[in-house]
Length: 365
Image (cartoon, rainbow, N blue to C red; front, top):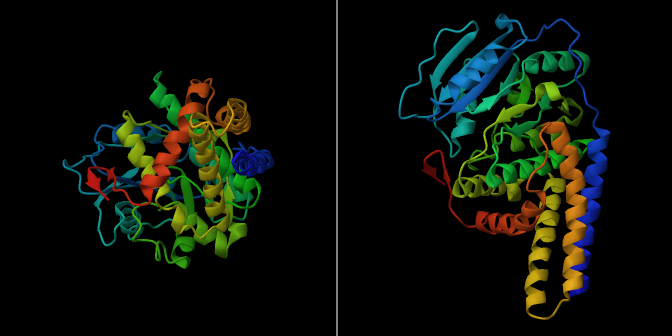
């Protein structure tokens, strides 16, 4: 039994080593020396976000970018109260979501597409804030590269609690895997809070056709469709100027349901690399849990259990630290505690996502 668990963990260790290598292969780009020329439509699906939207719009008003070259389309997904936009220097439209599928967010993006007149589209979330050079860096990158889709980074604005820093470390690992996979030319994941693509590409891919029965995945499935057809057109922009900051969740139940929502789409990935990575990560975490129970039952020695946990902790820390240093200047906190807790949390999320229901934006799925 020890040999089997060790073999699974060794596969996990080598996989994370490859992701670390891939992470280092993606160069950081922060060039903003060209005159801006591209027009952008920023699509923001929202539901009951009256508290967060003014903060997002305020950060957009501070963009170092000509106001006439971008517009914001807010898509209201049946909020309980109507959101009214105050006077701003850039164009803001508020439209009602037209529901036709099982995914409110995908429907919101398709609804917004009906009024989009620019070729470049960016999606973000209502609880986000953007860097002042966000659009300028995107514009300069587009001018210098032949691309039709750009994935970007997302980080959390954390307070001091363990819950918040656990989410930050978890997100750092996900962002590290995302960047690492692009460095290996195996990109399979992105975040819809910082995702840009052309309308012409969206239409050529038939939008979300084929996966609109799945509640989440407005970002990942579109990315994987684009990579399968136009791999050279899909890029990751690793730039501190384009990191979008969002809010962590404030209770464990919401966090669990959010991660279940994210995990539930893994089995529907087009990317075989993404599916394989999901299995390897699940296997690595499950092996550590099984090792603990087998030690309690007397089948595995404490020395072997310690070695397995330590090996995974060391390799995870390398990837997380690289990603964390890119995402935020704040120091990592609760790393050891999170590393002990994460395998139990991750395996619970994965198993529950296979058959359980979850809540999102006041709805059950």
